Image (tube, rainbow, N blue to C red):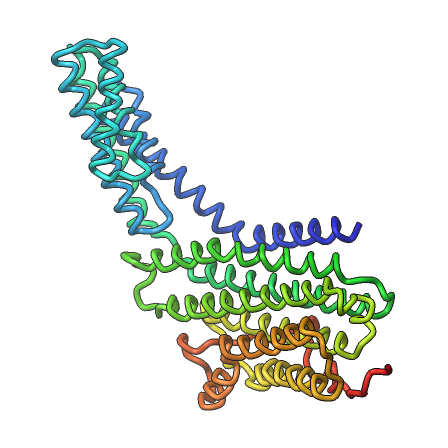
Length: 425
């Protein structure tokens, strides 16, 4: 039952957070589309009162984009596709009528022209325009062609003008939120794994099923990285040719560095869970024996410390994309950094005092220590601490800010250093 409730709870939490963060922007986006479509219809109907003029609002809807760069690209491709389709249709309508074979030739030739022109998502517009003009017959082909091109130009012009008058927002905040969300998911997985270890210590239950679930969740998280990268790419494009980006600092490089650091960290965490799963399945190291040792306690504390560091770093990246934040307290970063180092010291001390001779546990210890080293190397918390200590007062937009850690963050003060004893034989 917990295996079903927990994913549903996570989906509900993500959905509510998404509505809270994107509800206003989604409503503004729908309003911009509606205004562009209505305005293009009014203009086209005024110019062509005898026509339905529905092509103009359709073009405006297709042209209005999230970013100015994609707006220009889509607008040009849209106009070129209509002109190409009309040219093919006029050429054939002057010689042949409408029949099954002429229609097939027009569609095939239109698709070839669209691929040669590299029209992308507007490729189908070429044969559609050709068929609409071809359907007017030989006598009305030229009139239909000119009217279709005129309505297309009206819709494209209104779409471009609407983006110039009401430019879309710079979505660096959304990209920062996506990166923080990925870091939060990774931290939640690490905390959940630590809680499972604590539960296994109390109940003596085997860990095979749980370690497999951790590994599956870690793999799923790494598959979510391209989605976060898409949000970051959209944010970078939203600055280009956007008047709302004038006078603001480009935080794209910092966000990309943060995403790359979290990506490498997630791969290291996945490898760590692979080693934990192998240790749980090993014949030499049964899960019941594993959960009775101090090693399991140290691993649980290590997972909590890793979660705290990842969560803090995700919030650092998020604040980089948001203006108006004060200089964070370097002590909070120091807690996350020292927590990882303290956890690494516990594992090293346990490996020396209570060694295990089987290769599986040696591989597990190596994977755990390697993961800690990878996180320290990728997150660079010590460098951030030194940078913040050298910059008193308010931080500039190029400096990463840190929000206060909530009660979910596990720090060394919450879990004091583990006293190590030899395991009873």
